[in-house]
Length: 129
Ligand code: MN
Image (cartoon, rainbow, N blue to C red; front, side):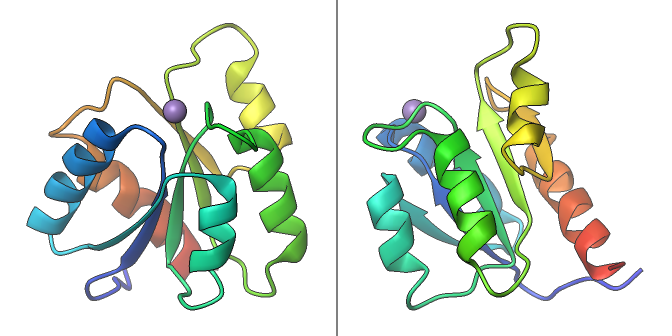
């Protein structure tokens, strides 16, 4: 299986504690992490970086993660997997993330041990085309 060296992850999340946690987990496993705390910030970041994958919080101020995902999917010229990272566990929430165009779904609270492999699995489905 083809694997990316030091994949670049953009994490869109308004909660600082979560950003610190996810950065710590992923950097320890060799990932590079860029952060955005809102939709507008994510758009700004994407003018200068092309991440291998976007981790998307759903409950965001200004623009929620569903809207942000569908907007990004319609605007990005390259196909970047977007994986929802959300505490929304109500029935139908998973379907809602997929309808918005998310390529996958990781449930909060974040499983510190599982997260790197969860992210890798979405990256490898990308490299397999
Ligand atoms: Mn949030």
